[in-house]
Image (cartoon, rainbow, N blue to C red; front, side, top):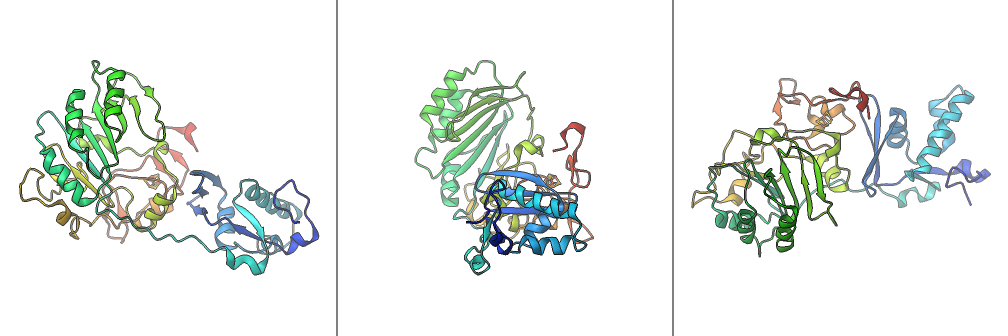
Length: 365
Ligand code: SF4
């Protein structure tokens, strides 16, 4: 019996025990503080940088080792602090005790990322003049094995319009569709629910530019969410929002962020004019969906189209020092600077060096 919880009494054997980090609880250091990503629980917690250091540099050591490393003068208050850190880590199930000979039984998780889809999600924009060939789009989506669609309309649309569009996808590989459409006072929530009952792929139906925010139907199992939001989305450029409310902690995003740009990787956009892009808001176009000879799969396999896919936060100025870099999905287009790092033309509202959000002094998370 050894101390596995801070309230348990330590035994003499405890002093020989090693602390071992649960493999799916990963510490990420920022410029001024760290964050523990609890991947299975999809949560994160802020920790002092020294705690990050303990978890990344000294995993598998004894508490006596830690005290020797961090407190060679053996000052009582520093020893107490280290005990408190260990208690904190135990309390939150970030670590457990382990015998030295068992350490190798608990390897690190594999941070490799891959997906069996040429493209994982597609954004399709619509305005009052859009003339998308939906039959062609469905065929191309099938070839890409793409399972997630986002349809954004900058103008109000009738529900029968979405019914028609989604009818094309009835036997497709698409598993979820997010509809973001301009607010219309004539769209009743009951009618949206009927649409969702008919098209079970609808993950969410959001009306933007609404006079007020309203959560109309909370999603069940992540599907069927209906809401009105006050954000104005009048063009593709209105969608570059970075907010801690959009952070996502899970193993898919964490591993993808080790190798790729988490917004552009395996994404494809079709703008309101039908132009094929990495994202509808970007300028470079790789053809038009209404061209009868277009082949999205071929386009998606070209190095030019994949240029943005491999740019990581770890090689991006400022973001590389941010503790949120493996949970943040940032749609700003990066460019390569003379210093060998990627940069952005617009600043992020979060400053990892002061740990503050722009225009929000109270929001020091
Ligand atoms: S600094 Fe970079 S990683 Fe951090 S919140 Fe902003 S965009 Fe995301």
